[in-house]
Length: 355
Ligand code: IPM
Ligand code: MN
Image (cartoon, rainbow, N blue to C red):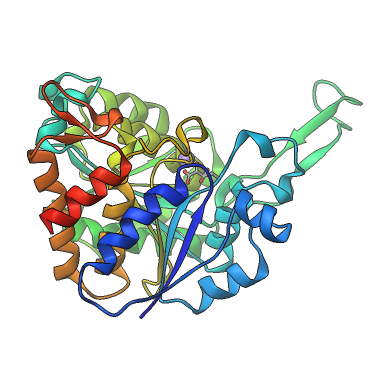
C-alpha cells in the first residue's frame, strides 16, 4: 500500500513527522513517498501543486496531508497561492466527501470555551460537499459592472451552483454515515433565499426516502450556526455544501476545545482519500516545536480505517491518543489545569509509547 505524504507549509512538516512515526510503528509495510505541496511546492517547483506531486497523489492508495499557507504568499497571483494545492487535489482527485468529526474528549471538556455540560460527550460529524458550490462555480472573476447599483464600478462575482447528481452523491455518503451512528441527519442550507439551496433540499428529501431508518431534518445555516453553540449535542450528522461546511466545521471544531484535535477525511466514490488535520498551517508557531500533532495522528487513523482497510490499527491509534490525554500530556492549545505541557515531538513520543 502506497501513501503519498504531503507535509506542506508552516507546522505541516512537524506534525506530519509525528504521524509518520506512528504509522511506521504499526508493523505494517506501507510504502511512503513525500512530495512538496503548497508554498513548499511553489518554492521547489514554481507551483503549489507541482505535476509530480499530483501524479504521486493520483497513484497512491491514500494521501496524508499536513497543511498549506503562509502570509508571505499573500501577494502571489491566486493560481500560485498555497491554498490552490488543496483545492486542486480535491478537484483533480474528485474528493467530494469531506468528513469532519467534532469529538469532545472527556479529559478536554474544560479546554472548551463553552460550559462543560453543553459539550461533555459531544460527538458530531459534519459531512461537507467539497467539489462544488461557490468555491468552484463558474463564472467567477472581477470585471466592470454593466448593471446593478453601480454600473461602471469594478465588481467581484462568484457563482453558487449545485447539480442534482452532485447533491445526490453527498446525500448518500451522509445518510450512510448516519446509519452507522445515531441515525439522525440534519441537512443545512439557505433555501429561504437561495435557489441552489432549494434544489439541495429537494434532493436531500428525495434521497432520504431510500433511508427510512434515518431521521432527516433541515435547518437554515444561520440557525445551524446558532444551534451549534446553543445545543451542539442535539446534532448527530450534519450535511451541507462546500461554503457553509467550511464555516460550520470551524465552528464545530472549536466546541471541542481545540481545532488541534480534529482529523478530517476527503473521499472519492471509491473511498480513496486525502487525510488532513482540520486546522491550518499556523505560521505563527511554525518551527517552534509546540504544535499539537494529535489531529494529524488521528487523520492517519482515519486513513487506515477508510482507505486502507485497517480498522483495527485505526482503533489502536485512537486508543493510544485517548491514553496520552488520560495520562495528562497536553500541548499548549489543549492545556488544562495540572496537565503536563509538552511539545510536538514529546506528544508524538507519548503516543508511540502508548501504542
Ligand atoms: C479548509 C480550508 C480550505 C477551504 C482553504 C485552505 C482553501 O479552510 O480545508 O477548510 O476553504 O476549504
Ligand atoms: Mn476551512
